[in-house]
Amino acid sequence: MAVPRLVPTFWRLFPVLLLAAAFSGNARAQQKPDASFVQTVAAKFFLWDTDRDQALSEAELDAAIENPGNTGRAAAALAALKRAARSTNYTLPPLTLANIRKLANSPPATNRPDLLLMYDAGLKSLAGMSHRLIFAASQLFPSGPPKLDAIRQGHMGDCFCLAPLGAMVHRSSQEAASLFEVEADGHVLVKFGGGGVFVDQPTPAEFALAMLAPRGRDGLFVNLYEKAIGRVDNLFRSPEKQSGLDIDAISKGGSMGRILSYLTGHRITTFPLKFGHEATAPAERDAKLAELRQKMAESGQQRLLMAAGTQKTSTPGLTQKHAYAVLAFHPAADTIELWNPHGNNFAPNGQPGLTHGYPTKAGIFTMPVKEFVQQFQEIVFEGPA
Image 1 (cartoon, rainbow, N blue to C red):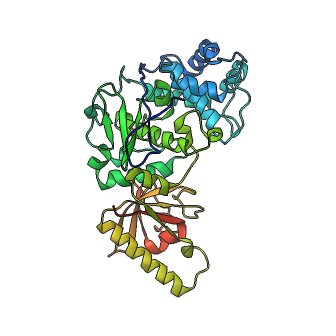
Image 2 (image 1 turned 90 degrees about the vertical axis):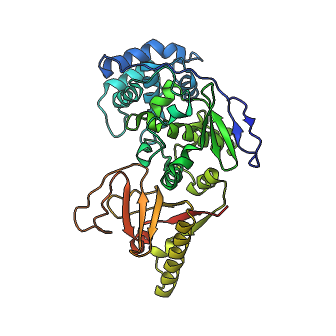
Image 3 (image 1 turned 180 degrees about the vertical axis):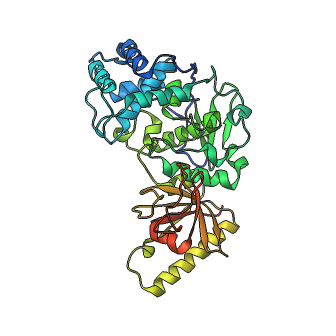
């Protein structure tokens, strides 16, 4: 891993990573995915297997993914293998060429990855991408300042990173755009609070791994943001717990409050909501609800960011152990408006509420505050400057 150069700032833990990377895009392969995947892995396997033990280790996959020379089908194949290796849904055998071929030729199952589907998704992400992704800030946001619908959580467990970003985009798309400064050579400074991190533009395999196809070029800033947050998060870990790819550091969950603090440079406060779904005396419950409403109203008036998280949920359409952006509190209606980073759509099969769920479009939905505290575990607030 490259040694970072620090940006002068009060936040001295923030590194600057200067990497030069070339991106060579490639149109989607014309061969059928099942044929081209196996052929591509077979052609590249011995280049990726650098220790010559006839199996691809996690470190070897990471090194190949960070190599901008792996483009097109090779990039999509690496992304598929990495997604399979990263998943906790199954235990993979050693990634020998024979085992990879066997996995690719076997029907998908709950205990086996669908490598061909993952490979095809990577090809779609890479389709039509140009030689260089970024030359200037205007090319980072080709359709104008970022919008919520450009942020979509993929297969990583990084909702805790995306919910705060979504809250900022909703508050001010211009503010969110100002997080990114594009250098003449294509490097990007991603700014947090009073400091920042330089990241290189994604390699083809990183781009395929990010699953940007649904959001296209307009979602490239999300990948840069994830890389920067992952780089910082990685450095907070002890050396033996650091991941090979910085983005892996945020792939399996974390603290949305900490990310909210990274993003703004401000302290955060956490408001537990256990009173909403545990045995609580009515007077205490009413007092907590009044306190919560006041806190949300003050945060809304000061335009401070808010995010909320679940643990267990019983309402259809809500996701367990998930982070949401809080977009608004509506005192007159006593409702809270939230955004799910998955950007999902949901239609209740019955009267909207705790039993049937809430109408959701592009991840946005509204629910009564009294019901919100019954399903959510906590809400975090950005502190004033």
